[in-house]
Image 1: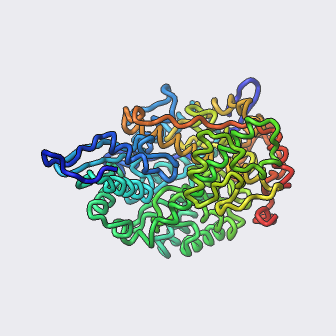
Image 2: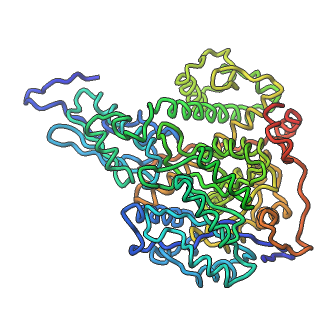
Image 3: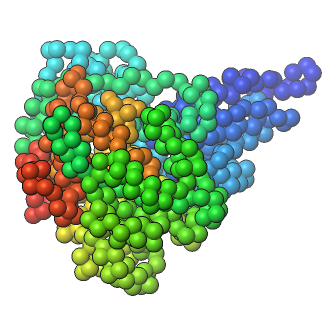
Amino acid sequence: MTALAPTEHGALLALTENDVLRALDAVIDPELDEPITDLGFVRSVRFTDDGIEVHLRLPTSFCAPNFAYLMASDAKDVLTALPEAGTVVVELDDHHDSDIINRGLAADAGYRGTFRHEAESDLDELRAVFQRKAHTAAMERALTALLRARDDLGEQDVAQVVLGDLPDDEAKTALLRRRETLGLSLSGSAPVLVDDRGDPYPAASAALALRRARSTRISIDGNAHFCRGLLATRYPGAEADQAPRADENFFPTSSLLRNTRKSVA
Amino acid sequence: MYTKDGESFFIVDAHVALWDARPENQRNIHGKQFIDCFYDYHANLSPESEKWSYEEYLYQGGERLMKDLFTDGYVDHAIFQPAKLGEFYHNGFGQTEEAWALTQANPGKLTYNHNFDPRFGEAGLDQLRADAERFDLKGVKLYTAEWNGDSRGWKLDDPWAYRYFELCQELGIRNIHVHKGPTIRPLDRDAFDVADVDHVATDFTDLNFVVEHAGLPRLEDFCWIATQEPNVHGGLAVAMPFIHTRPRYFAQIIGELIYWIGEDRIQFSSDYALWTPRWLIEAFVDFQIPEDMTEYAPITMDQKRKILGLNAAKMYDIPVPAELQLPNADETETGPREPERADLAAAR
C-alpha cells in the first residue's frame, strides 16, 4: 500500500475510480453474502477537492435499515483506510432512513449514535448471524458439487468428507473464506459438514443437516434474485453494474432423499 | 373455478387488497416510497403482457377488483388482508369501507379480514371487539413493520400482542396472517426474523398462523419452525410470480415447502393488486418440478388442488363442491401435523 505522500506538485497521489471500487469490493451485503460492487449498489464515485464522495443505492426504500447502515458505514471505513483518500463522504440515496443514516455517517456517530432510541447495543450479533448463514450456504454448495461429481459418494459418507477431499475450485475457496470468518479449522483433515461451532454431525443426521443447509442456501439465493431484479427495475441500467451470480447447484439426489426420510423417521 | 384438460381446480385467493395509494391519500414521502416499492415488485416479476401502468397501479377500485379476480381470474373466493399503514396514508392503505361494502355486496365470494396493532393498548382491544362484531372476523392480517408514532415495528410475542391473541381466541378469530416486513425495534436484530412466530404458535395452539411469502427472505427458518408447529402455515404471496421469472427457483421453493411442511399447509395467493391471479393460476397448473431436480418429487394435481384453494377453504370453512374435496396427506417425515405432537420434532 502506498503511504500518503505529496507529489512534486504538492497534490495527493491520485486515486482512480477503479481503486475506490476495488476497495469497496471488501464491503459485503451480509444478507446476500456478496460484495456491494457485484450487486450494483455503488451508484457513483466522485472525486472532490479534498477527497472522495460515494453514493450507494439499494433495491427498495424499505430495505432493512440496519443492513443499509452496516454497508454504508463499512464503505466509509474501507475508503477512509485508503491512505490517499482525504475526506470521505458516503451517502445512501433514496432510502426511507437516508436522512438518519447520512447524518450519522457524516458525524461518525456510530450505530447507536445514528439510530438512538431504536438501537440497543450493537450490530455484532446481527452480522454474526449472517456470517453463520453464509458459511452454511457455502458448505452446502461445496458438498452438493462434490456429491454430483463423485458417484462413489453416498449421503451416508457426507459426514466423513474433509476439506482435503474437496477439489480446488471456487466453491472450496468460498467455503474456506467463510470458515476463516467463523474461526473454524482450515486443515485438510477437518470435516466439511459442521455446525456453526465447527462440530461435525453424526452420520445418522448428516443428510438432514445437509437438507437444512440447502434450505438456507435457497433462501439466500432467492434474496439475491429479488434484490438484483428490483435494483435493475428501480434504477434502469443498474444491471450493467451487476456481476452475474454463480450458477445455482442442482443436485440429483434421489438416494439422498430416501436416506433423509429414513434418518428422520 | 379453473378447468384445464378435464382437471378442475377450486380457487381461493387467500391474500388480496383493495388499496388506495394515490397522491391525495399519501401522507408523506413514505406513502410514495411504499407504493413505488410495490410497483417495482410488480414491474420486475410480471410477464410483459400483465404489466400495469403506474397510474393503474395506484388504485383499482371494487369493479376492477371483481373483474380481475372473478371474471378474468378464475377465483371462487378471495380473502381481504388489509394493511393499515396509517403513518403513510391519510385514509390507510387498505380501504376498509370500500372492501367491506364489496364483501357485503357479493355474498359468498369475499371474506373481509381486518388488522390490529397491539401498540394501541386497551383502546385497540375495544376496537378489535367492535371490528370482530361488525365484520364477523374469522381472521386478521398483521404487518409487524407498521410504523406507529416513534415505533417502527412490533413483535408477535410482545406482552401486549399476547393480550390481543387472547382476545382473538375469545372472539373466535382463528386465522392470524402474518406479514414479516423489515424494520423492527431494536434494530440490533434481524428485522425478518420469524422466531416470534414460533413462540406464539406454541402458546396459542388453537390459532392458525399463516406466514405470508412463506417467511421469505427467511424461508429456511420458517420451514424449520413450521415442522415443529402444526398450526403454522405458509402463504405463497410474493413467491408465486417467480414461476414466470425464475421457474427453477420457484421449483425449489415449492419443493422445500412440500418437503418440510407438507401439501396441506400451503396457500396460494396472487397478493392482488401486486399481481393478478389469472396468469399465476394458469402457470401453476401447468407447472412441474424440472426433471433434473430429482431431490424433489414431482408435484401432483391433487397437491396443486390443495394449494390453489382447498387448504384455505378448509381454514375458512368455505364450501367446496363435493367432487373436488380431498383428504389430508400423511404427516411429513420432517415433523408433526397433529396439534398434540407440537414441538416433538425437535426433541426426537
